Length: 198
Image (tube, rainbow, N blue to C red; front, side):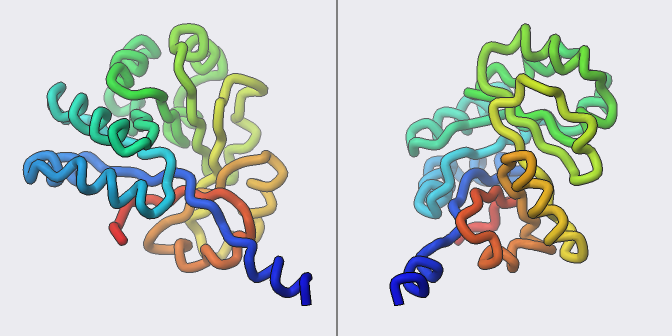
């Protein structure tokens, strides 16, 4: 009886969710960034990843401050740095309003380990690393404060969970493809891409 109860009580723990640049524009233009950050915190998330490409300086600052007011950690998600020919110093500059930076699968596919270690030397705040499952061999041996594995494919979901467990990583779920499998996570921590509201 006790075993059944404790197994039923185990559930996945929300970790972080992403706001895209259109979402930031939408909430900022309606002066509702505080409200959406409160909803995110109310869903037990701790981190909000912010895509600030082409978002005004004032809006970037406002989004980060709104997250902090709600007890969330604002992390700047540096999306597609290779298409914008960003140097490592540019990544550091882009993350200036956040309390951390996220480098994702695009970074690891297009930048070297030396680039990552330069980022680690230049950037004093936490670095969140996000990879697709086939990129495990591209990971640095040190320097990621948190790692997540993008378990976005329903077909590969179980293998992706095993990799996340092996790496001690957070599981990132796709709202379109794998969020529905949240009940299979047990007590693992998870991220949700993208925020879709309550």
